[in-house]
Image 1 (cartoon, rainbow, N blue to C red):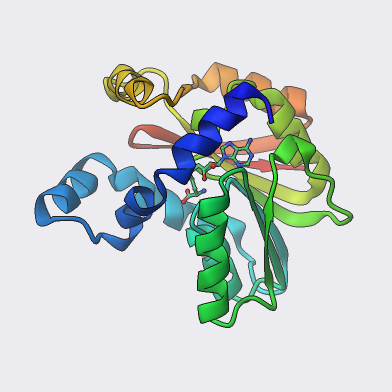
Image 2: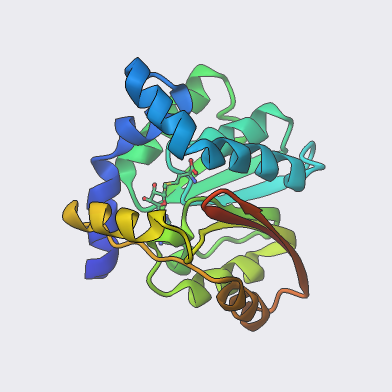
Length: 216
Ligand SMILES: C[S@@+](CC[C@H](N)C(=O)[O-])C[C@H]1O[C@@H](n2cnc3c(N)ncnc32)[C@H](O)[C@@H]1O
């Protein structure tokens, strides 16, 4: 793993509980209010992804940067035939594996410790997602090219918007914690998707984010 990825891995291995509590809404009342006010787009992004991945039942799905498995496990609950979640942070993957076992979803879910660009699956997936991933990727093109290579139908990704008041605040806040974060314009996304070989795509602005469904 290069220095950049090691930094990311380290950051995320320390963020497991904090990050997951955004979904669990298990923080203090005040912090839950902060999340609902400033991070509501994360909840809308979840619904966007589930809707745009349909039909889920019977399909195969790759979740890149699966974190604590909130998406991967939901796909399995909704009847996906096989879900593979990959992540560079082992502590995130440990949560995924424990939850999959507890919910008896481990016959359909596999979690792999790897960086996407090094991942060599011997299968292709109907759907590939990268949610909350491109925020932390210095070179997004190789990642999108790899997604394009392993998917047969569509990729669903989220990218944080460049022109928002929160972008510089977030960049500074995460830099203090040793985590670099990257932002995107529509033009940049258009160029990246074309260079990666996606034929067409739809883009939806959701709060501070762009949610994109790109078709093969
Ligand atoms: C913000 S979390 C998002 C987790 C999950 N997708 C979600 O939205 O709930 C970003 C995750 O991407 C992982 N990650 C970052 N760079 C990665 C890479 N190159 N390959 C695989 N995972 C990566 C991090 O370890 C972290 O768990």
